[in-house]
Length: 171
Figure (cartoon, helix red, strand yellow):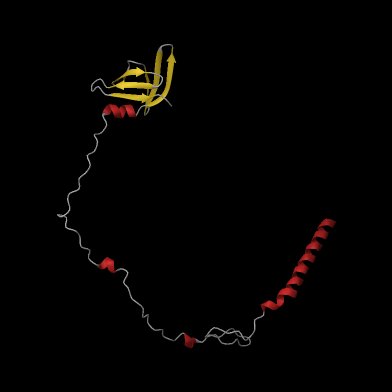
């Protein structure tokens, strides 16, 4: 309990020293001389009353603004001349490439899941959406023949059109 009393006494002494320092060095700076100029319209303070306001200064009419008056919305009101539609040539659209074939769309949607090589048998696991395909060389995958199956590539051929597509098996 003695330490707490000592600490409290020390804090009280520091507080008293700060107050004394403030009174000695800063007490004279708050006073303003009475001769200070007042803004127009404020009367000298009367004893017991706040500053007075001269209402006659509020009754003055101000002259109108004599500067340049510019209508910033004038361009919105003006009629804009539209160019004659017959004078412009018809725009030419670039020719679009043909859409990909059903086979190319199918092959691009396949996702490689894994590869199994057991002795000479090579098997690839593919998926498309929720369907999982397990294919070997020579199998048909949704009507398309697997013509080549290596550790790096799965080649599909559309037997009807003769189109070829390769699926990279590297991850």
